[in-house]
Length: 421
Image (cartoon, rainbow, N blue to C red; front, side, top):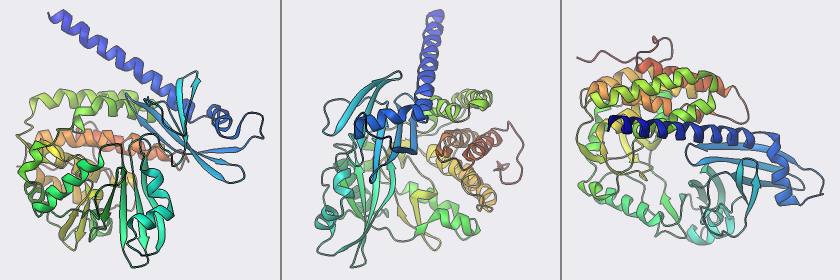
């Protein structure tokens, strides 16, 4: 029986490695000029003068595929998405073509095949008529866009209101609306829905306060009590336990490690060692009981009014989980802030302060290992198709994870795991 188990595990490893190699080649293809004629042929027609194609962004989801966003400069700029992910069924405006790296699905922005409401949320006329309440639209800005996954658009109106439009995959908006009402009914500060979902677009009032990230930037959030964030998690209502459970960062570690390797192939040995250390440490540490959890708990999703938490954002992953994973998510993101922007000079001191308090609430060793896993998961997120020395930022994030696991000594702007009594 043990040999059968070993063979099965070995087969799964070989399958994953084979899949990873396919996706590495797909990613390289999408980032090369070889994909340019495929794009121009699809949108401008064969035989027409070549147009300039510029890659604007790339997204790699291990196990699913890779997606690129491109700008075609001809008579006017056109933005195009190309993905190796499987898109099932017929979608209007979407083209399919074969390449040496498998089927490519191509669309012109904003006709994202998985986000049917994106066209509605990016058209000024329909935004004004749908959510303007009679007020003139003065600005429309894309805050974030993850192709095939979600987008957030900010709409400003002449009456002073800012409305955030969250565009979700088909069938997901109603679920998100219910989550917000669940929190608001429990007096947990969260964005207030403007109205019912429309074509899988949820509109929210602007939350009060500034991002916790700004406080970390200014002085390491010196006036903020780390214990308040534990208390916020403890205030999540019991009804959260009835929502679907989702994997935490550490549960998806093999995929994140593969993504990190695709970003930093020269660091593969270091990345795989980190993966092995985390996977070896997880079973011998205490994860704690299953409790209501946020699922993506870090500084960008927390607004502050002075020293007080004023709004909890991005509750898509709300559900049953583990407190240690929420706290590790917070610490893993805090650890890599200097790798995001060198101005976060106060982040290491803030990390020490928050880690001491968090480690007193959960198993310290479990928290440390899981925070390192989160830091590793953020390595591939440093990728920037425009260059800008992103590889050094990615390696900085990798060193943060290594420091947290004790694989390399701390120094300068790297985090330091405090000795917790």
